[in-house]
Length: 101
View (cartoon, rainbow, N blue to C red):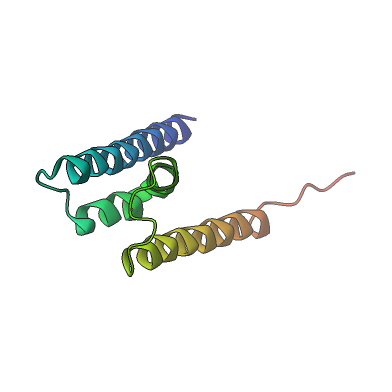
């Protein structure tokens, strides 16, 4: 239970952080100020913030046409989906069957 809470807290924080980074970078782009590097934006997504990153990308319309950034972000999301599906499959397959008497 504690591990689940820790994972949930981490994912909530990293997604909020990724969302924030995209919004700050969008504002900096509009104002002509110093930008957040694409590597940093992608790192936030890679570390678990892909939902926040993609949400911000769509909501504030930031880097939606920029290639290869868009492909890289979508690739990170695809890899994470496959990893989650694999982890889910392993957890189902390794579950101890209940024997009824």
